[in-house]
Image (cartoon, rainbow, N blue to C red; front, side, top):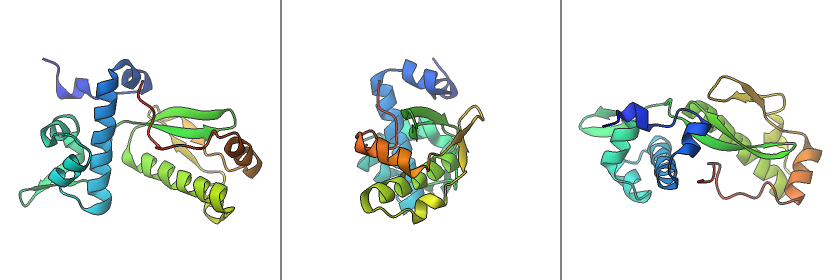
Length: 169
């Protein structure tokens, strides 16, 4: 029997080598934990919302949770791998980030990009000028803030997306 730690994806290649079903499950687990962290949902509520058994969440991602007063709550941050999408001048790129803080920063950046593309408001986008996030290997990835590049990608339909999380295989 594989140890739980062996089941968790360690990098982009590992994530995509797993079955489509596992990738979907992993992403739903990450969403559930994010929901617990952001909105104070219980493990049962978040698991139900994302259609994942709470025992599966505990088995694969229990390190992101702590038990307090008989209830599981999400820790302030976690080190679970997330495969996310980041825009580059060449289009969208899937990257792995190794913790929830990098994922949150990328989500805030995406919100700023969408605000710029939809409303022309670049105030939030300016906050990311010259900023970068680190992927799971520690490599820096500069966040694209060049308005002309973002306009070009937006007009080409490249920046239309349903989710920050990578597609399943």
